[in-house]
Each structure stands twice: as C-alpha cells, then as structure tokens.
Image 1 (spheres, rainbow, N blue to C red):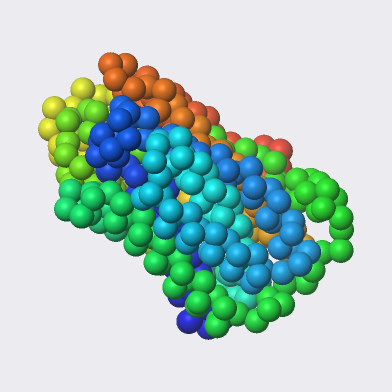
Image 2: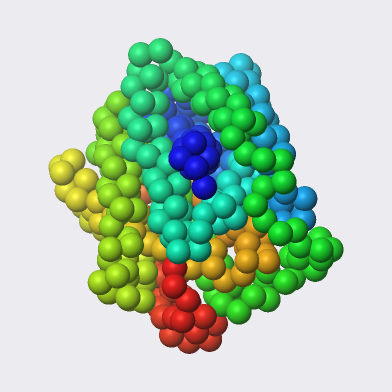
Length: 389
C-alpha cells in the first residue's frame, strides 16, 4: 500500500467525519437563518446518520462482489454535489434532505475506503494502517468544529459546506488516479442476501456489531453535537463552542495514537477499559458545571476513551472474516451511524426549555451498556482473544 493511497483514504475519512460535526458549532446561526430553534439543526446530523446507516448495508455487499474503486468514486461525487447545494437550501426541510443524501454518499465512501485498507495492507501492518486512516476521521473532530465555528462567525455558515464540497472533489481525483479498477480483494461469489447472512453469522460478529451501535454510535453521536451540549450548559458563542469541540477532537486523536500501545500493555482489557472511560465521560456532563475548564475536563474523559477504543474495536471487526470484510464494515458503519442518528435526534427533541441533563443521562447509560459488551469474555468473544489486531 503506497503512501499516496494511504493519504487518499485518510482524506476520504476526513471529509465524511467533517460532515458529521460541521453543523455543531453553527447551530445557533443556522437556526436563525432557517427561523427555527438552534436544537432543531441537530436534525441535520441525524438525517446524515440515518441515511448513512441504512444505505451502508447495501454498499458493503456490493463492494465485496464488484470492487471498491468505482463505488468510492460515485460516493465522493455525490457527496461533493450535495454539500455544494446545502447553502442554497431554502428551508430546514430541504437542508435535512440534502444532509440525508450526503449521508447516503458517505455510506458508500466509508466501507469501501476501509475495505481498501484491509485489502492492500499486509496483515501484520493492518492495525497500524487502519489507525493511520482513522486519524483522518479524528482530525475532522479537531479541525472542522473550530474552522466551521470561525467561518460561521466571519464568512457565514454556508462557507463550511462549500469547503467540504471542494475537499470531496479533490478526493475523487485522488481516488481516480491512485487505485486500480479491480482493487485488491477476492470477490465473493455469494448472492446479496447470502453475503449479508454470511457476515452476520461470522463468529463474534453479532456481539461486536451490537457494541458498534450502543457504544461507538452513541459516543460518536455525542461528538457530533457536543458543541451544542456545551453551549446549552454554559451559554457559549459559536466560535468558543467550535474551539472547545476542536479541542475534544485533539484529545480523540491523541487517544487514537495511544490505543495500540495501551493494548500492548493491557492486552484485551484495553478496549473495554477505554470504552468505559468514554461512557463515564458522557455521564460526567450531568455534573453542575460553572466554569469552562470543568466542562473541558469531563469532555476530555469522553474524548480520550472514544479515541482509544474506537479503532481497537474496528480492527477486531476487520479481522473476523476476510471473505466478508466489506460487508462487516458496512454493518459496522450502518450501526455506528444509526447511533449518531439516535443521539442527534434525541438532542433535537430536547429543545429549550427542556434541560440538557436527560440527554446526557440517556447517552451515558446506553454507552455504558455498550462498553459492557466489549468485555473479553462470554459467547462470541473467543476469536477476539486468539486473533491479533
């Protein structure tokens, strides 16, 4: 796997991660633009996650049968188009529809991009290469909230979506020039439904995929709206909220870099321990904060646990089956983004004057139950103990 290919897939992950969090710091300004409560803007990442989660189930099996490159290119072109149209949306309903279509395209991008990493990287380098590509997703949580919040306060919220469209077009060019048409995988000869069933029946898959929704989906969903949660707690501006969310993204990226060393030190305990850390960080937002540093401390606990455990969880899924790798990635992406949708939708329902505490309590308890599924014992976890990520 060449450095250019790795950089291209890194960028693919960056743009789809950016689309999840771009609206967070701009909710107040976008709410005024569309004439709705700021919390209603949470329906944008909710629609993105819902369409992403639903269509990913189709994208994975098709990539296992017909290849990775062409679907990845179509996904990038669609993503570019719908992001470019977002600033012209006349109503919130139209913006939600465009966000949903962007999510559909992201559902094609992520499973194919991650499957390409596993196809092209040597087995002994898989965990390392996946971690490097995931840094693109984590970097989106660092840069995008800060940049989108700043752009919203200076050039208007529309500028963020034009920038995303430009990045999508550049990624399309890089995929076109950097990858062979056939990809590096051996095509599955099963039918569509048989491919779905084969992946679902892979030993260990069901329990880990359940954690993809209950834990990873909800901690990622919390990240998509953390700027609004912080603003509701302490009445922050778009710029301050974006900088805070960007700081959390930096901690997520630090956690991503620390995941493999922690796994070498703690073994199988690293994944559930860090998953528990992320869940407790969300529950810490229930505390009656009066200062920004207190809120930032709780957020760092969530962000570090999320950053550490997320790639470790995905690496375990990627080695469960070479034959159904793309389909397992699609299940994972589907359930993860269903979690993002669930979290964003729940926040959208908790508009003023309802307190934000019940949203944090629900998210924290669900992620806590998901972390319990990652404990290294019980049915379906034997393969995870004997495989090397």
